[in-house]
Amino acid sequence: MPRAIAVWSLIVVLALATGAAAQGDGRLLTVRVHLADSVDDGPQAGRYYVAFSTLPGLLIGPAPSGENWTHYVLYSRGRFFFASRRTVDLPPFLFRTTLPPEPCNCGSVSPDRRSLSVEVSLSRLAEGSRLQGPVKINVVTTDRYSRPLDALGRGVEDPLGFVAFDPARDVVVRREVPAGNAPPAYDIVGVEITLRVP
Image (cartoon, rainbow, N blue to C red; front, top):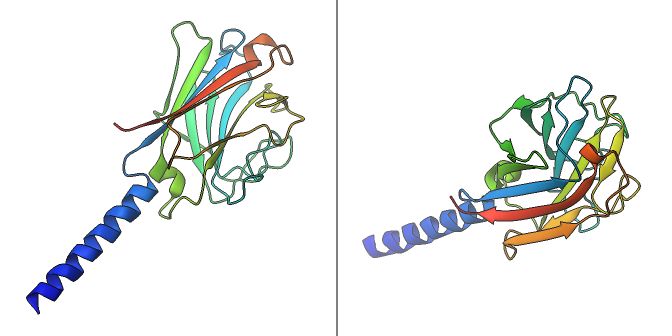
């Protein structure tokens, strides 16, 4: 009987460990956004969003309109904020939510101010459940009135311009973006997504 209990305990421990690994087990997703010019922090500055979607379906990702966002990091006037809900569907082109984002220590601006990085743990994106498939990521810049200026892919008119990142097999994914379709401080020219184990 003790041997059966030991075997059962080992099975439970392995199952829990596997579940923890699938939920993130401390791994961090870093998204570095490259811009055509310096990040704008002035009094009339717009906003910089890194949007995530953990919704199932390869074609369901964070659109530039604010649809299908399950989490996002916001950079505005020198500060970073994080918001998390199972679905953060924002009204198209209004970028308002009933759940205000909370200040976070989850990002930085490069010394030359032409890129910003955000870092979010996979367990925070999973929110207590297993991640099903890839995390979809988009970057959206807006003016001070929350009107979208640029996004990944072909810009704000491209609902499928997001990047899919699968933590089970991807380590680094890079994507270049066409330049010149937004004011330089808000013109996204590239993104690099990295999986990091602290």
